[in-house]
Amino acid sequence: MTQPVDPFLLSTPDVVCFDDVDLMGAECTSELQVLEQDVYHVLIQSLGSNPDDLERGIGIEDYLSGTESDLQALPAIIDAQLKEDDRIDDSTTTVTLNDDGSYSVDIAISVSGTVYNLPFAYSNGVFTSGNLVNPGTAPNGST
Image (cartoon, rainbow, N blue to C red):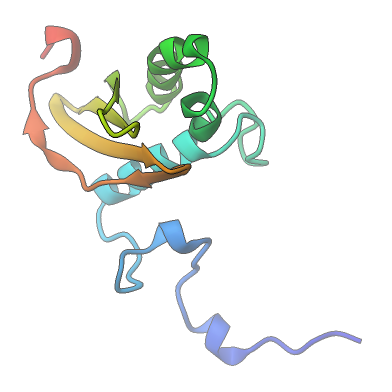
């Protein structure tokens, strides 16, 4: 027996998961927000877990809770994945162990000549995204 489709679901925007909306439940309103969200999803998804693109994904929580070798390799892995996105010209990632045992993951992405800083944090086994920070200088000193 087929279940009827709720008419309310047909009249509302597609909400894939909580990470796709802001605190008030609004969908992304700009291409830059979409890109920021896509970066976050690449970070949290395990490699091969996205059926739309099996070559994407990092599984950052595994790296941040892994070995010293995992931590050392992480910035290059992130930058390589992000540079595969046609919207991103360059990426520079810094991973910092804080005094309290948490990690800061700061990513500077260059998009059409403008650099945006994306702050992320990992604490008590939870990876969170910050808000896009105002444009800065280009990664690796380029413009």
